[in-house]
Image (cartoon, rainbow, N blue to C red; front, side, top):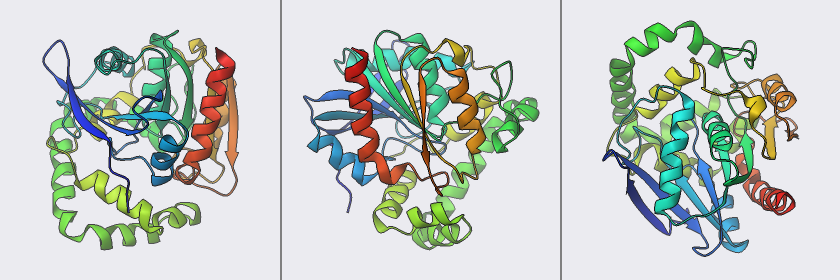
Length: 299
């Protein structure tokens, strides 16, 4: 049901940590790096995106953050610090310039890389991305705002929290499919439509339960960092950003997407009518095509 990755491997960083990645599409194609959501990993790419990458000549590379997949657990000081590791991984993979796609919790890391790695990063697409919770760029309200309110507790108890998340995932492994079906019943109509499609259900189950040797510390690290200053201002991200957001998103409010687009110097908002948090995944082919076109215009 799912197109497997063409290549699945790890890159060793200068400090001996590892970052795992998976490649889809055309190995000689234009490189686009996909940054997964929270939770998520390198297999969190919809089948539409995997097929479209091959058909349109895109080398689509999904990169695990520390603490998921085979990536060494590591808590950065800020979201911005991830850009240094991503830059090194891009060198290991022999990339020159590249574009980025960031889903949900991958959005902040995308913006950090777009800020730090200009002019190497040419264009980017954010899919229902998380907004800052502190500082002048912060958006008001939303679930993620709680990460700033409880920042000291989250930082202090990140290890037991990560253990609890990992234990829960392990406990659900034998009943993964019925658990995901039950979860879908609790979601708004837009996300329920996505989760009821067999290929998306297969993708999420494979991503959550497969290919990881370090449990699921990455989601806890994400939550900790989302409640801190990101280390840069989104107002200083100069590359073209295409922001895709469902207007019925129950996780990251649609107004947060509007807020971010108003701050970014070169951004366009693509509204997904009636869709919730997962609404961008079924239109991955359209997102890839638009991103390639945006890259061409930016050159």
